[in-house]
Image 1 (spheres, rainbow, N blue to C red):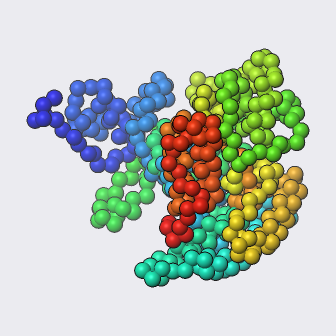
Image 2: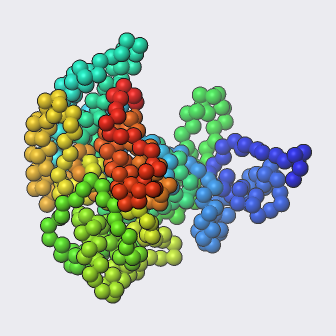
Length: 473
């Protein structure tokens, strides 16, 4: 194509299902994009989606339409699950830069107006009281050790010191804290997200899934158009065909409980072994990796402890774990995420992240600032008491106990990466703008790589933990 015929065009926003239809037809015809848009405008996009996406399975079509969705007044637990997509772009309300106190806590519907609600709110209130009481002494300490530079405006200094204080006090927030999430995702990711949420055992998450279906079947909020003076506001739903077809996945609903039962019968590992915050695994066979990863998901044990047990199994036993993870899969189900295997760099990480899985088994973190500010005993007393309460409370009400898990409690997560991904995480997250907790993890990732692979690890430019600037956000 010569320069005289070349065109690069930007298109105005369209309903996602229609834009996907237009681009799909555009790729399958000789028409210009203008002609394709005119053609699609006169034909049913729902009929096209029914035939080519849902009946024929041309999944890539759904990558051509994107939607903006906002979730408000949800729990931090729900936010974790909403964001749990491999291809996801979005932002959540930050606990680092604002006071989460006024938002209140989410109370599971199953315990509302029951005697259990009082116990639940009592635990939440204890954590919230400590969250608020620690703010002033921690902020005073940080201001003493980092006075305002003459050239810095007072308002900017106050905002920065508040953010650094919330970095510490947020350890006392729980997964019941209310938050907001905004996302921009493809229709394909949206379909997976709805089906996954509808398949989870937690009532709030299923409710979010149903609300998400309803949002896709309804006309979108058009505040921007109204502010711009638009008189004719489009009333078309964003993704009505998707909303009609989205449903729970029997594969997801039944497979993880079956894997958990298998793990309970076969692992028998006894006490959880002590482990480092970051452990880089030695290379091992793909079947061992897959079986270990499946069992890691449904247990609280370190990856190395599970792997050592799996490596002693017969191939028949390993294959049985894999077969359990496959036997309920339908032609429309994507593989479980645990099937992502074959990565060279596998890190088992133990850190203070809110999660939904038995966090109290791993204890809790105590930021150094708490000790320096003289408030560590108050923090530790609260966390220890809450840990004991959750241990008891969780036996009879595990879902409610999961919501009350503080951010400061430790959990495990498995990171599987190639070199470029490891370099990106270590370089970006070790920077001085980051939270001190994940800065340490990022730095330890680089250190582990350099110890095992000196040439590769030494090329990763991380910021040492000793380099800090509390005034940089």
